[in-house]
Structures are given as C-alpha cells and as structure tokens.
Amino acid sequence: MVAVDGPSGSGKSTVSRKLAAALDAAYLDTGAMYRAVTWAVLRAGVDLADPDGIAKIATEVQLECGTDPDHPYLRADGQPVDGPIRGPQVTAAVSAVAAVPAVRRLLVARQREIIAGADRIVVEGRDIGTVVAPDADLKVFLTAAPHERARRRSSQDATDPAATAADLARRDRADSTRAADPLQRAGDAVELDTTAIGEDQVVARLRELLSPRIGDPRQ
Image 1 (cartoon, rainbow, N blue to C red):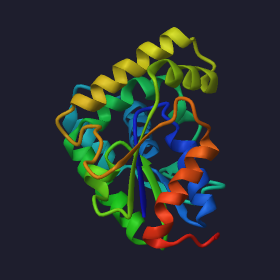
Image 2 (image 1 turned 90 degrees about the vertical axis):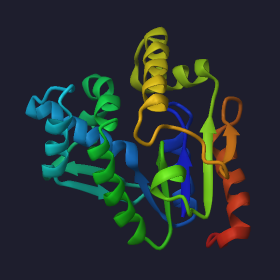
Image 3 (image 1 turned 45 degrees about the vertical axis):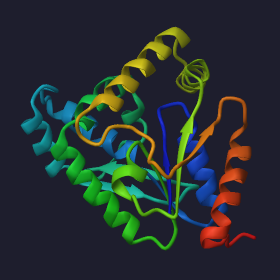
Image 4 (image 1 turned 120 degrees about the horizontal axis):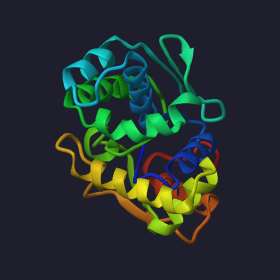
C-alpha cells in the first residue's frame, strides 16, 4: 500500500492515479470523500458552525467509491457527485467540515475498510501516512512552490491565479492547524518537491522506491 499526502496543487491526484495504474493497483482519493460529505452538508443547509449537525449528515450519507484508477467515481446517496464536489462552494467549505473530529473518525474508518479490501492500493490525502495507514509500505509527501501550486490549480479550475493562491493559503492554514489529524509529513515519509519535475518523473521515482519493498507487477 502506498500513502500519498500533501497540500492541494502538489500533484497528489494525478501522480496517485498514474502510479496505481502502473502498479495494477486500486486508487482512493480520500479528499473527495470529505468533499462529498461537505456537499451533503451544504445540500441539507446545515450551518458550518454546527459540528453536531455536520456529524449527523456524515453519519447518514451513503458514499460509494469507485477505486479503478482509470475510472474512479464517487456517489453520495446514489447520486454521482464527482463534478459538484469540485465546485467553489464545496471548496470553500470542505476545510470546516473536515475539521470536525466525528467526521474524521467516520471517514478514516471507512477508508481503512476500503484499504483492507484491496490487494494493492494507492491512497491520497492529507493524513494517510500519519493517521489512516501509518503502516503503509511507502509513505510519500508531495510538495511544490506556492506559485506553482496556484498555477496548476487555476489552470485546472479556470480561476484567477491570485484568487487561487489566496484560497490555497487559506486551506493550508486550516488543514495544518486543525486539532484533528492536521496535514503534516509522517516522520518516515519520502518528501518530493514537484515544482520543477513532471508527473511521469515523480511516478518513475516512486516506482523505484517501492519496487524493493513490495515488488512491481509491471516489471
């Protein structure tokens, strides 16, 4: 199992999906699960300052995660939400929802169930190597310069680079300072700065690191 952590815009999603495909492994985007709960919270009109109300929604919503790296999907109560959870409203609210301890306990338990049911899996998020799977075969922490992260995200979402940079800084502060499972590098994680290297180079480097540990079915 490979744990890939890091802030938004560091390349986690693309690298994790490409690595999973290269290893013939499953793929799980844990951040999307928090976004799906956030989408459900907003749909229900729950105040973001109401942790009990947020926890209730998290308990009630039924999430279905597709783990094929070539065709991942996420459904909430049977409804496809891959598009809606990437919208600005969810993006603005997800850090508040993800900071609720009860939500984290619930989703971490669900994530561990998915991991346990997979033969091989690449899991991306913000607390995988530290909380969800501290015994992962390989722990990776991806980083990139703030300006490059903002460029990537604004290009992906067709947003203003300055506004995107400000939003990323806000999310970094929220994710790194929350009391429950903050974003941080595991002590034994390999840190890679992706600012000046391409996704395929990162994947190649991770395969080199992983092969002596568990082997590589594509070699």
